[in-house]
Image 1 (cartoon, rainbow over the protein chains, first blue to last red):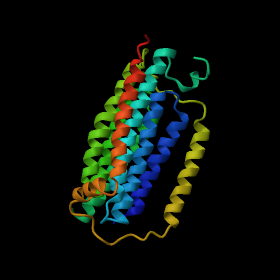
Image 2: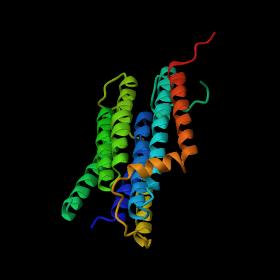
Image 3: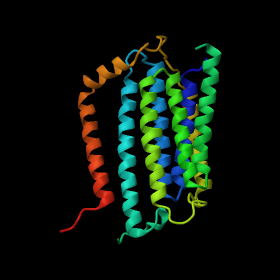
Image 4: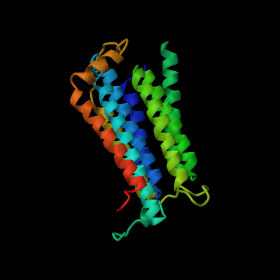
Length: 102
Length: 168
């Protein structure tokens, strides 16, 4: 029987993989992708809790809707920033963006 | 769905999700990463279907594997001038990152295993959409409207940032 622990395990693995990518990637677009992976892991947890702990309220589903909204906003503004940085500095590698001067 | 079929579906979808997430991180080509990310999102939405959250699964397919993945591919295409072959380089921290992430996984999984979960024995809602809709427009109405304002602000901000303000 697939229970809460199975879903939490998948969520943990997804979160840890996203964190690994966040720490090791040099390209900012790849870093954004890894943030999306971590947000998805959190959503799996929320929906699994909603299904197995309080199935009659569906609070976790409402919460994950808000998470999805914020994630969409985050990736939009993040990519706009990446475009701007690329336009001004000609690079998208995070470790090359180490000057305070523009 | 019978018991064994849903078990099989869970393991299949979990494998798709985790393997493609590893591919996102490990691939040297950023376009492959973006496409594997879309596959990962589709796997996650399959997991939502197994959790009987069909509305969230549809939203996940539409927003994540539709809009976000396409937006990320667009971002990749517009910011790569040279070849895609080595467009997703890693820095020198991979050993430390592996250590940190492994430790974090061990901690979280042992906490999950040690916690006595008081699961509800109630079955999942037959049709969860009316419940979600009522919660969104009564208890969480302020948050709902704030999310709408946030979306508008993000859209305006993205346009201003990407296009630039014309200086007089």
